[in-house]
Amino acid sequence: MERGRVLEATEVYARVREVAGHGSDEEAAGVVRRVLRSLARSVPGHLCGRLAQGLPAELAVELEDACGGDPLVEAQGFIGPLVNVMDVEAGYDQSLGGLDLSAVYADDDASRWVRAVFAVLKEAVDAPTRDEIERHLPGEVAGWWREAGGEGA
Image (cartoon, rainbow, N blue to C red; front, side):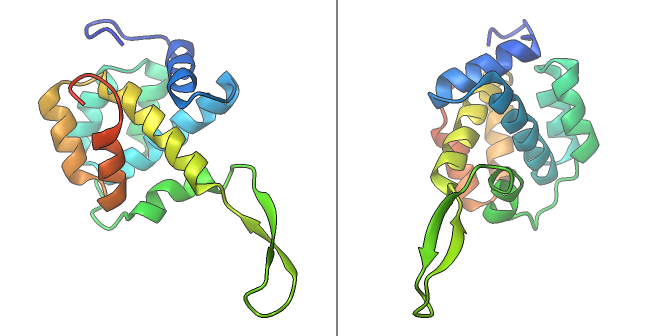
């Protein structure tokens, strides 16, 4: 994203899909919204406001509705809303000696999507804001933010 120019939501989705390397614009739209909600739960209001300034209004509202800065959000709580709506692969659970069909969540795919969203979001804010957002993210998720592409990454 060019600093100073807010992209349209469709451009954000296309950029996220491009960085992720797969998926449709529709899938990217759902991922972006879920990641924004999880991000908003993790960071304080003033950071939501700074991030919202670089986003189209229809995406900025996702931050307003969920903003809270809850220090108890952990990595699984952050990624959970995304993983819960992703397609699952069928697998057999043999932990109890049986062959019970279970769902194996695509955590790797979810983390790839989260990193792609982070890469695009990092382009929407300045370096001090990027650093402050990272400090409020839970453990592994902070690492995804740090490792995500984007300006200053």
